[in-house]
Length: 295
Image 1 (cartoon, rainbow, N blue to C red):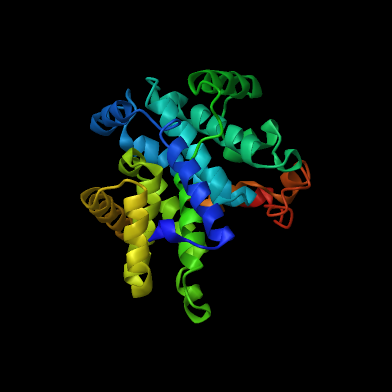
Image 2: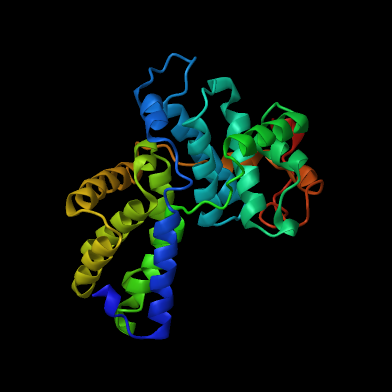
């Protein structure tokens, strides 16, 4: 069905899908490395899934604090998982690794004028390491990533699948397939190590398929199946990851699940500190000074 797209716009979307499918496995975490992290015991000496997931939530807090989008977050998580799946990282170094992944992802996806200063980034994230530590870790990160920083992530597939499916809906029903909601769900999925084992295409299509089912968009069911076939995903594979994604989203929406704490970051940035930061940090410029007597 998808191969019969007639319009030039649809053909362009199909071409983009071909490019993404060709590239998606070139910059993915080592499956064996993720399995090692997943099976590690939490003894304070080894990297574990719990520690990794906490670090990703901290990255999401920074993303939200600075107002960066899902593309930057997805790329930062890709860098982190690729690095952790290759290297034996001690928990005490995880913060430096995570912040380096964030900083590199920002540099890749954002205009130069929007890139935070390293000094500001360290101050806001409340880490104790120095700029030299951050720069040295970034150099190590680039080396271990083989300088492949233009990674294809689930974000790219999610955007493309949305464009393909959204165009097939009537005007009255387009609002039922909300991209902002889909991106929020992808962010939640990134906070679970197990979902980093999925190919970007299958993770994005799982999120999309669940939304189509939930919103009862029956006119898109055949399109989802066509995208699955075109992406060379088996029905069993999609079903498996849909179940895991559904479980993740259910757990993430529960009150027992810890969420990224942007307020924690905002609380430490008083008006006095904000005046020392770059003017582009528009989200924090209005914060009042915290009186010293109240600390």
